[in-house]
Amino acid sequence: MAVSPAPYAPGARAGLAALLSAVRTPLLPHLPAARTRRAADPNLAEGEVAALGAAESLVRSLAAG
Image (cartoon, rainbow, N blue to C red; front, side, top):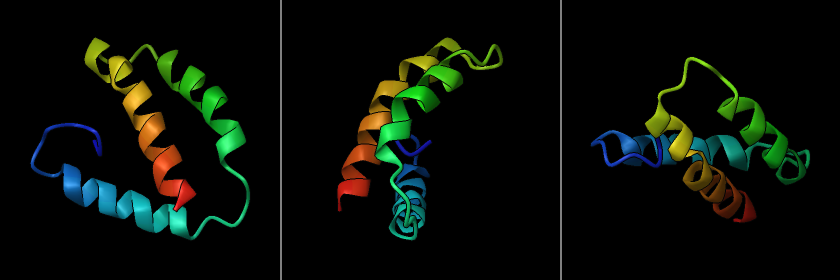
């Protein structure tokens, strides 16, 4: 949602940033495995799977501060 062009994306990005600011354990090493698991979800639409790269990049940039 946070990487979509939808009007709610800025709010989703703000919420994600707030959540990531509260994380105290390293999460970046786990992103590739999380992306792989998410991509394997048979309930995701093709567009959702295609957006996973952008979502991972967004999480990386927000987590870096």
